Amino acid sequence: MAGIHTIQYCDSSSHDSVFAALSSPALRPVVLGFATIGVTFLSYKLFSFVRLLLSLFVLPGKSLKSFAANSNPRNSWAVVTGATDGIGLEFVNQLANTGYNIVVVSRTKSKLDLVAENLAAKHKGISTRSLAIDFSNAGQSDYAALSSLIQGLDIAVLINNVGRSHDIPVPFAQTPQDEVDAIVNINVHATLRVTSIVLPGMIQRKNGLVLTMGSFGGLIPTPLLATYSGSKAFLQQWSSALGSELSSHGITVELVQSYLVTSAMSKIRKASASIPTPKAFVTATLKSIGRSGGAQDFAHTSTPFWSHAVMQWFVGTFAGFTSSFVVSRNKVMHEAIRRRALKKQAGKKDR
Ligand SMILES: NC(=O)c1ccc[n+]([C@@H]2O[C@H](COP(=O)([O-])OP(=O)(O)OC[C@H]3O[C@@H](n4cnc5c(N)ncnc54)[C@H](OP(=O)(O)O)[C@@H]3O)[C@@H](O)[C@H]2O)c1
Image (cartoon, rainbow, N blue to C red; front, top):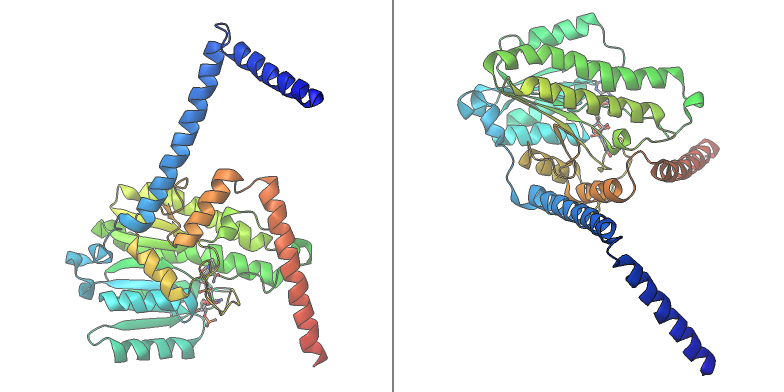
C-alpha cells in the first residue's frame, strides 16, 4: 500500500509540474499558438467532412438538360465512348432516358448495332449514330470518320468513358509491350483525340459537358498496374487543367473518380456498399454534376458515389494518397490479386 501511495504521489506531482510549466507566463504564447493551430486544423477537417456530406446527400448537381440547346435534349446529342458495356452502356441508357440523341463509339460493331436497336425500341423519337473504332490502334482515318459522323450535330455532352486496364496485375518490367501501348492509346490518346474533335462545337455554342472517367488507380499510385495508374493520373491533371481553360467558355469539365464498380473490366459481379453496379454509379454521377463529392482537393473533379467519396476523404485526411504507407499497402493488395489471378490461370490451363 505504501508503495502505491508513493507512485500516485509521484504521478500527480509530475502532472502538476507539467501544468505549472505550461501555464507559466513565459510559455503561455507558445501553448496558445499550438492550441489555436490544433483547433483550426480540427475545425477545417470537420468543415470538410460536413462539405462532403452536403455535396453527396443534400446539394443538387447541374441539370443534365441544361447542356442541351434550349435546355431540350431532343435538340442535342451526347457522345459516349466505350458505350456497349458496363459504365459506358449505363451512361448511354440514362442519357437516352433524359431525351438526348446518342452517338455511340466502341470497338465491336455487332454490339454497337445491338445498343442502337435497343435504344430505338425503348426511346421513340431519339436518334442514334454509331461508329466502330478500336481505340487501341486507331488511326487518322478512324478519327476523320468520327469527325464526319458528328459534323453538324449539336453535341452537348461528351462522355470519355472508354478505358482499359491490365489483364491482371503485373510488374511493369514484365508487361507485354502491346498491353502498355493499348492502355496508353485507349486511355490517353483516344480521350484527347475525341475531345479535340468534339470541343470546337461546344466552344462555339458556349455550353457543354465533358465528363471523363478517372479511377482511384490514378489517385493512388498502384504498383502492378503502373501503366493504368499513370494513364488515369494523366487524365486527372489534364481534365483539371482543361476545366479551368474552358470555364470561361461556359463548358463544364469533370473528371469522375471511382473505386471499383461491377463490370467486365473489374471482373466483379456482386455489388456491395463499396462496389456499386454501373446503374447506381452512373445515377450518382449524373445527379451530382459540378459537385465535388469526395474530391474536394481536386479542381473540376468529382467522386460522386457515396462510399467511394467517404473512402477518399479518410485516405486523404489520415494517410495521404501518395504516401509511402498507402502505396506499400496498395502493392501488397495487388500482389495478392496477382497471385490469385495466376493460380486461376494455371487452373484453367490444367483443365
Ligand atoms: N469497373 C471499374 O471498377 C472501374 C473503376 C474505376 C474506373 N473505371 C473506368 O470506367 C471506364 C469504363 O469501365 P468499365 O468497367 O465499364 O469497362 P467495361 O465494362 O469493360 O466496358 C468497356 C467498354 O469499352 C469498350 N472498349 C474496350 N476496349 C476498346 C477499344 N480498344 N476500342 C474501343 N472500345 C473499347 C468495350 O467495347 P467491347 O465490348 O467491344 O470490348 C466496352 O463497351 C473505364 O475508363 C475504366 O477505366 C472502371
